[in-house]
Image (tube, rainbow, N blue to C red; front, side):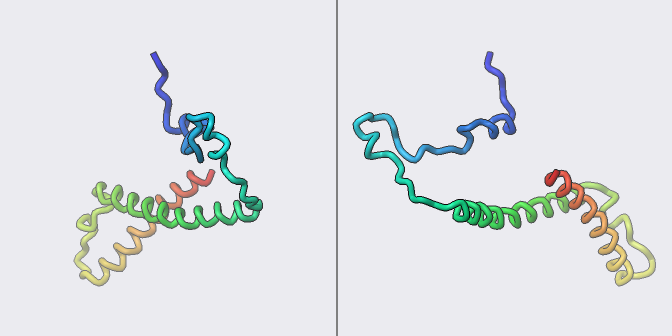
Length: 117
């Protein structure tokens, strides 16, 4: 029986996400199919990696931000109805905004810290 591997184990394999640049099924075509070395410098490669990182980091941050909001919404502690006060809506909105976003920031900060370690 084959062992079931986790996504983390699969990602660590040399072939994860790799797509061969050419088809090696026919030996006659193998010389024609070899990739051409374009001579990219280390700076070109690092710059491209930075571009990819910068493109994705905001998307991931937005996804995590929204996920925290969605999870907080599921808990009564973070329901606005729990905190209505007789002082009026203006005071409630200010107090609620501060309360909610302070705790949202704490949760988001913990998640981001965990990912960076």
